[in-house]
Image (cartoon, rainbow, N blue to C red; front, side):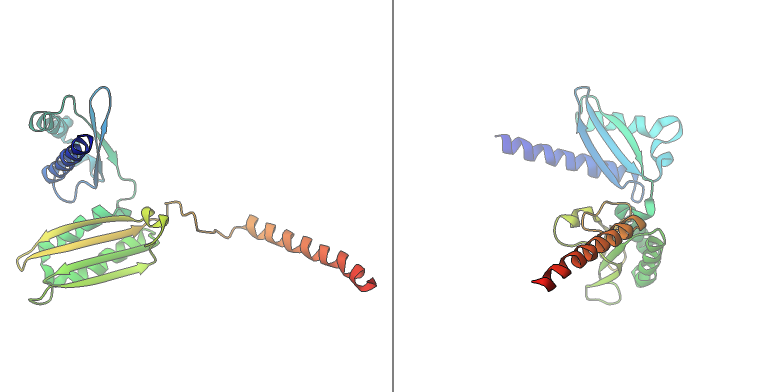
Length: 224
């Protein structure tokens, strides 16, 4: 029974998240979190356009709160806005931007759109980027295209620090899938070693100490 209730809860959360993203519009929302507090449900919306989400004098937030309360039977929903500090390094924002451009200019210009996005993310300082676009792009047969720059963590625990997102574009030839993966320079990497002046100084001291120990032992070895 507990497993069924947990699955049902996750399904309801997924429905709410998708409804919020669809209602606010593609390209405006990156992620949606739901937290349960003693006061009520806290819905956190991550966006790089907080002004468009809040609306004039908070009208959109108030309307969305009432809609969630009536449509999904939430007791006391409370919406919070989390502004994205670096939107160019957010995978969902870039994936939505690519799909909007594909829908606007058509899938035949997918290479120009992909390389432009790749350059934009690289200029923002990303350590690694991967863009995958799949669908009926240049011909009648579906095909997958990959555009990459830098390096990405794809195995082990470090792959969790890579921001990933996927979405679809509704074009005239058909549906085009877009996947974006970004390794931000601001995430903490456990296996990354930074060469600093302090590290170089410490290594030099260690080498000098080792050389001193070798010199002290060498006369003893000669006597023996």
